[in-house]
Image (cartoon, rainbow, N blue to C red):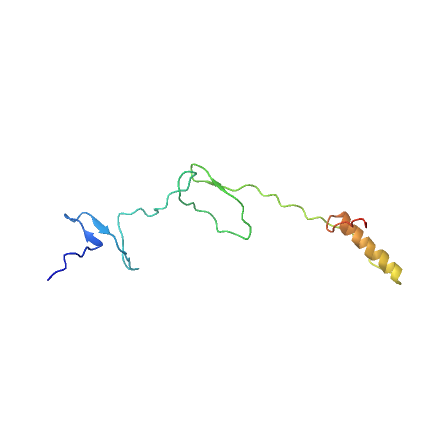
Length: 123
């Protein structure tokens, strides 16, 4: 005797013009689907969830915006100039006091260029 309480999740409606999929639809790699747009993803806007085509991400990322025509805008990024310390002459010191003078000159050059914090006054 047939089970009259069973209700299938996937079926073709009367007349055959509509299929209802309530379960899982598995599309095999060799299958073809016709009638769907080739790019079903809508263009993203402020009000519409969608996507945009953009170059691949690199090591650096910045915020972007998309206009009403789907164009991507990236703000200009200014890379700060790395400070360069003034050159310090090669050491010709022959004693500890001379080496101390050269080291202090190197430290002063780094501090002046902003590459090293300045000393705090002892309390």
